Image 1 (cartoon, one colour):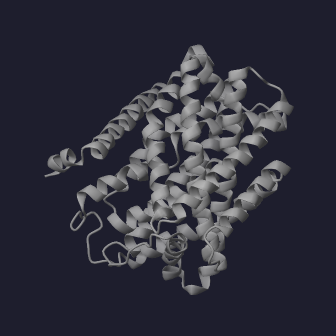
Image 2 (cartoon, one colour; image 1 turned 60 degrees about the vertical axis):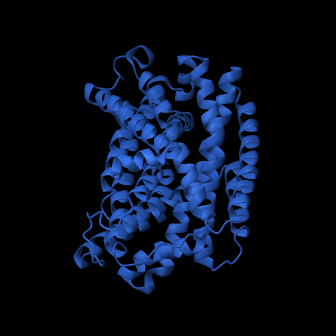
Length: 412
């Protein structure tokens, strides 16, 4: 589930752009974002395994202020993230089936996603997505090694900043790290899915079993991010080719990264795999946010009833789809709206990340989860460094946003 959520916009869109526009000069940001965000996602799974409850309940244990903060963060991010993911998924659908309408694929994807989640058919879809995900994983790895053997197609060194506008570099940096590998506030989904899995199976796994599942998805996601950066860098950087700003055209350019390596015969396979992965991400995002938001409301009200939870989940799910569609509709009027929506969603995700990072770090202390489940010294230190990392770059971005001339003076 984590991999299905992560391997989407951050990889197909952001990582590919990072390599195509900036070569390997942003590889450090991809690596550090994956490293320093790791503890906060791991803590979500760890807390659920230790307590049998989602980490959202933990926020309430920290105080009502923490729960309110998470509620507000979720309220803002859920509509932006779902809109961005839905828009990207629709773009890959347009490319795959040659659909000219921008909104028709969005409507279809949203209706099918809601139908799957309300009917409880997600288990079947999840199994299918895993198979398709393996196809994309294998093809990406093959393409990665093939482009390495061919060498860079551009005439600019991959680590060179020559010709790169520093302000554009900074402007892209935060959106890239915002969803690399995904937004930190989505760490609550790990705990929700862990708890749900325990309820479904009646088996409470050992901590190492839960963390093995999580680590497998996280490491796979991180490795694929490097592969996508490499594909973009080797095939596009320094060649004069640029990414289109409209959705379907952008999706076609991403698919071209594969077909330029494999040949045109692979177009339909890669196009179908990319769309399927994005569709799985879209369904997972609808499910994750609807679960998280309804769970937050239930915690506020001290409700545990299954029937009430299902009803609220469905209300949130439908409301989220309507609001997200309206946001996509608004951005569709702008030719650059596709990428602007992605940048807005990823930026907001990064700016709120330090808050969730602090909450998650506090909740894995021994007094909350016990000594046997508490993280070791290395993981605690990495979490502290992660909080500093996220906070510093958040402050730098805010300075850039409100006073870009100050940043320009620092660069010069």
